Length: 527
Image (cartoon, rainbow, N blue to C red; front, side):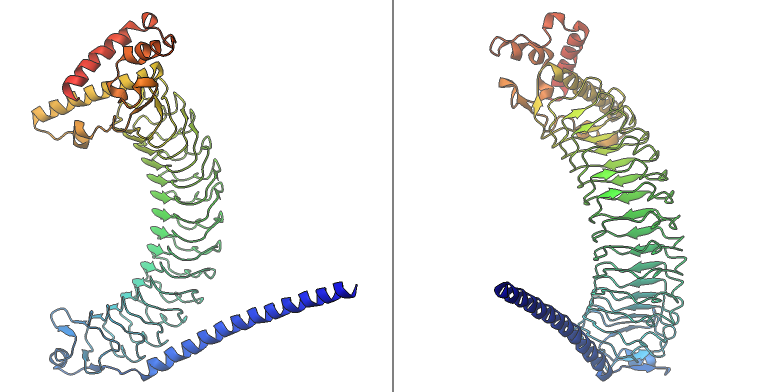
């Protein structure tokens, strides 16, 4: 009992020590951050200040400094001068409209650097090493419409930084080290049209942080560390056209998250951790044209997930973990033209799974595990012009698969284990028919002096990579070069005494004749 008790006490003591150590480590990190922040503030106070001039000769005086002054555009540029501080010898006219201090080594800016620049409408401090902005730095910039502060080292912002910038339209804070945003930061920025917060370290956003940005059109939040978004995060953004949330850590989307975004056209959710999609999550986005859900971990999509997306033109679902397509999933997507589902785990494409895609022109199914396509699986996409099936596990394509796809111009079939027997005769004949048709069209257009669609017959990428895996001596040959007799009789008759699967004497003679005619045309015009 005593030994067990001692062991228990020792374990508890070790846990307490480790806990204290972790607490001390956290405290030290916080203390270090505070000291660093204080150092940045002190450095900003000690910095030199350039002179703002109201004199009549202010532009002449401006030209004597290290920066470039242009009176005809009312601009001052200190771009890429290797500055570590704003030059005290530089005279800045109070009537300057554009000020560029980008591409330097500025770590801080004195709080009075922009005092009196009431007419300034464009400020570029991009690509520096700025760690701290004095709270009152922008207080004189009533008329500024554009501010670029990207590619700096900003860790925090004060809710008063933008308080007087009523006319601000474009704010670029991308590629900094921001972890949080203070509540009310944008409360006075109702004129914002574009807000770029991408490539920071944001982990969470305050509720209604964007409230009041009623004319905002673009909001860029990609390349952060967001793992959750409040349901009312985007409430009131009724004019928003573009929202990027790519390369974050989102694993779920609240059903009400996008409910206010009635004008949204582009939504990027690429490279997150989404595993499924709820019914109706995009229901309010009836103007959305592009939706990118690629590079997530999606294994299942509810049948009603895309409800309301009647204007969607492009849907990206590549690089996920889909094994099946939910029946009825695409029925609301009546305007969709481009569907990308490559690099998933799809094993079959069944009849009706593409129902509703009457306007689809491009379908990307490459790099899946497809073994089987139902003969009617492409019946619902009559306008299909481009189909990519390479990199799957297909050995045959069923007879009649392309009978409803008369507009098909590009068909990629490479990197599949094609078994070239009689079951492949439909595909071989279809390929040669398409080539004959397109070659005739190309020759006709060439004779009329017009440019063929898709660059003519050379762009009809049907045969590239369609190499037989077997059987026997047919392995390594292009399917399109094999005759009907060779596919259905010669090879099978020569293998261990097997009879052909479809004996030639019982074969459709009309099909056989057409095969030979098309073969003759094909070899004379193409091979």
